[in-house]
Amino acid sequence: MRNLVLRLTAIMVFLLSFTGIINAQCFQDASGKFFNSDGTPCTNTVTSAVPFLRIVADARSGAMGDAGIAISADPNAMHFNASKLAFAEDKMGVSATYTPWLRSLGLNDVYMAYLTGYRKLDNEGLQTLGFGLRYFSLGSIQFTDINGTALNTGRPNEFEVAIAYARKLTEKFSAAVTGKFIYSNLAAGNVVGGDVIEPAIAGAADFSLTYKTPIELSNNGESDLTVGLAISNIGNKVSYTNSTDRDFLPANFGLGAAWTLNLDQYNSLTFTGDVNKFLVPTPCQGGAALCDTDNDAKLDYKQQSPIAAIFSSWGDAPEGLSEELREFMFSMGAEYWYDKQFAVRAGYYSENVRKGARKYLTLGLGLKYNVFGLNFSYLVPTTNRRNPLDNTLRFSLLFNFADVNE
Image 1: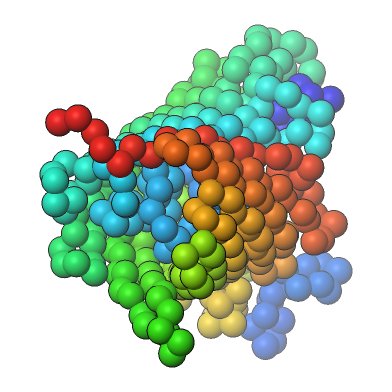
Image 2: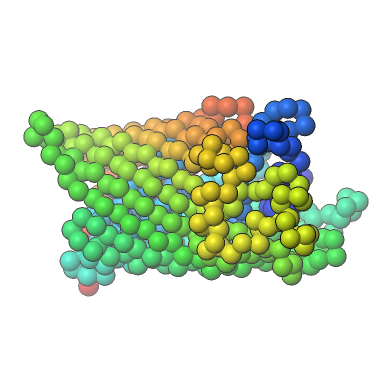
């Protein structure tokens, strides 16, 4: 069972280039809407290559519905919004996260490891350098041919190396740019349909902004409002063969806000919410007449450049504005801290049923003592759709250093 599931996982990722063909099985009625052959509304999920780049590994954000664009800065800002690092309170920080994957299916060798950190570059704290290393292992797979004959055993894996530079432009405003190297090896050396499978390699960049300001409350209390914007994974298209038909990286637009209430000397409460949307073309529906207008046997939407796709993705949904709005994903969460040592968190994530249908509650705890922090999160599905993190406990270790010897 293990080898079958993992092998299918690798094949499905590798065959993302055929997603448009799958979605094209829907039929358009006189009103312009698309339906399956049984009359149900057509599912038209936006897909990309190397989807592991969008997995939220951080247990803190994982406990708040995967919201993290605007919450207080820690090393895991590298995933959400690196410009937050300019507002980090400590001189240096490091975080390590381990995320088991598909444990509910009995798999023990599929996981994600995520190591992040940052370092202030000057005494004024205006400039910050961040780094991130993401590693995703799909375990051990026995590859077979179409007849089920065993070929060789492989260990598919993917990783990302990221370096970010964040700078405060004013006391309340910061910006950052992140450079990334991405490597995806799913079945290198094997042959499928006469094509030799190769690792996919890409370079990408993130651009992010953060605005943070204090807000006085009517009862003389204190609070902070933070707003963050991040455009992530803007880079070249990739392929696992020599084919000219390449797939997009999971480019993403993210907007988030967080409001932290400092209730008194010991108690604080944060409410946060994120909105995300893929900057990837929506798969075309309706067959070659609509999807291959130049009759070159290639889907039109897949021939766009990554930059052109950023702009076209805001208005290319086959059903128009109503479908475009369905492509937004929502995260919301809350975090309570007592004496900056003990935290309780909860959140909710929602995605439209025709765009992936992921919906789940999240819960978590946080502990902090001196320079050491430990976060836990747990996911509770709210639909019958299986989630890779069902019945899985994620945890993150953090080390924050207020003073570092120069």
